[in-house]
Image (cartoon, rainbow, N blue to C red):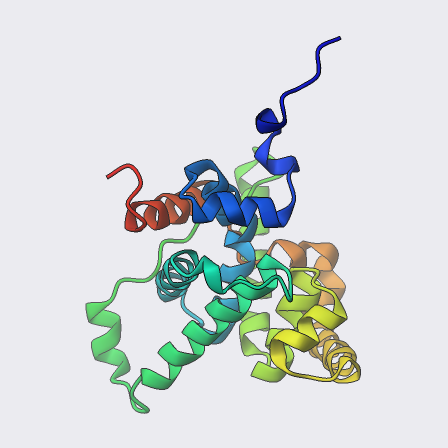
Length: 228
């Protein structure tokens, strides 16, 4: 039986450090793997800060370009995903701080179209069931958006993205006990309105797969000079 050459190992199976090394060498496949593995997490975190789909996508692109052109700054002290999440969160907070305190909402609604809504994955081809499912998703998204920010960010990271207590605490500069307390409080606030009715479907709020994920991946690759 012939042994498999070392350089033919699938990128998805190699270590994170090797993936980073190949990305630094501008290996497009390695960069794609990094993007697709982190797109949803970064989008959800940024959207949790900015409350706007289109702006969140723009900020995630900026964060990726900043990170992937400075990969030499990744020291491996945390996971690559945590490092990218921190950059994206800082980028979003910077965008938030740069916004004027007072906004003309009427003017804003006329000049900026709403972000494209990616349909919630339907479990049935029945139009009525699909519509009901979308309505439930919208209830969940509004309820999450309505959470006070300290609870919202912890909820997105711990419950929706299933990050560990320690990873969430490090990213938000909190004590692990504080993370646990805020998750409990966030669940209680959500349960008051929707969680009892929709159960685990909350994990699928703010979907970031399929067309949207592919669009962001291709946009970042273009900005990095691939496929130009």
